[in-house]
Amino acid sequence: MRRGEYLARGKEMNWQTLGVDPVKVERATKVDITSAYVHIPFCRRRCFYCDFPVSVVGDRASGDQSGTIVHYVEFLLREIASTPTRNCQPLTTIFFGGGTPSLLSVGQLEKILAAIDRRFGISDDAEISLEMDPGTFDREKLTGVLAAGVNRVSMGVQAFQDELLKVCGRSHAVTDIFAAVDLVCQVGVPDFSIDLISGLPHQTLAHWQESLATAIRLQPTHISCYDLIVEPHTPFNRYYTSGVPPLPDDETAANMYRCAQEMLTNGGYQHYEISNYALPGHQCHHNRTYWENRPYYGFGMGAASYIAGQRFTRPRKLREYYDWVEQFIANNGVIDFPITPPEEVVLETLMLGLRLTAGIKLASLEHLLNTETSQRFWQRLQPYQQRGWVQLLDDSGEIIAAADRLPITGRLRLSDPEGFLFSNSILASLFE
Image 1 (cartoon, helix red, strand yellow):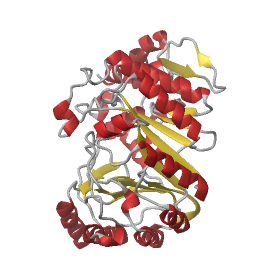
Image 2 (cartoon, rainbow, N blue to C red):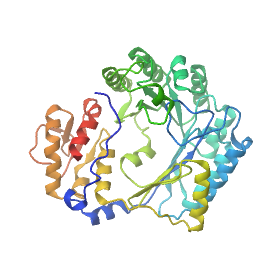
Image 3 (tube, rainbow, N blue to C red):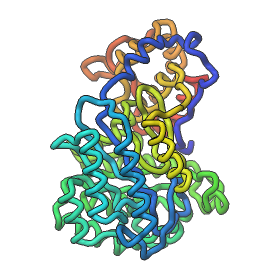
Image 4 (cartoon, one colour):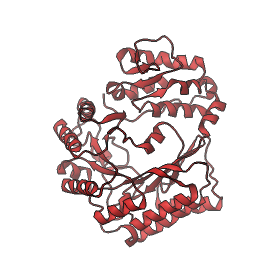
């Protein structure tokens, strides 16, 4: 079965039928915000699989030499300065995503970080991540980025075969990847991550094994392996259909996932989330904020925020985002957005938490659900436990072979790799 995105079911439920205590949910979501995501939407070109909110600026535009980027940074700084503070603690993680954030100049990056620090504070030991595509930086820029405070670099490699990079519409070649990694190692970036994509058009299992082996040899501290999702409104959606050649069939795609799990764990990487692997001590703390369903600020075009149990997303186009910032400032930082029902908070906690190999603490479910509903959930999950896809662990970490009732302590998790491969089916059954 092809691995896909998690399903969000149960939106038609209400909190009484689900057994959610809205008071407990409200209490659980009122915690300090210590993470921020900053969206830098500019790309040299749009990759054929991409449905992210991006703005194409061409091969020559970057940093202070691009009026479009300069204008965007001005609005971004205004948004940050106008955002109400909701935390008593300084930020411990900041993630610059995109787009291609490495198209910013060092000076622009410094301005953004200074604005965040003035408004919210940044912890001295904060994890500050920056996505940097191969071919978009040199030694001088990388040194400047580190001096500005960045201590983690994430590179969108995607594949180690030029023919596959061309199929994807990527702007870099394999030689650019090796040159970028050499720079990262020479300059001494404390943490760097590599992104890879499986299930690409014309990609074989041999291609995938070669990419994994090359990544292991380069020894990044973190590797992310994503299964291609053919998104609507992308060139790939016009060219290809999932599971139909030249895309790998479902069984090959599943074997690619199993292969990544085996090769990377044998290579010393810990599989800590459905798509993410890290050397010991190098997990991405920012992304754990998402998976543990903790609140975070978002800034920039298309960025999402999760504050006091409510999620909202900014407009995905530049002109609309600029208008939104103007209105946001006029409203003194007040945002009118629909209230998220308490049951959706619980469903999100389950869907996100089960992405982690450690799973979910059962005590956290007990704090949100009544006993009867917990048992109904377990009745749905028992058949998958019998297949070995769902696991219960006691407080010592030992797997519980069978259980008639959902314990109130220990953990609930999906097995690796089979439980993750069938996560869609498991969650669909859970939320029906």
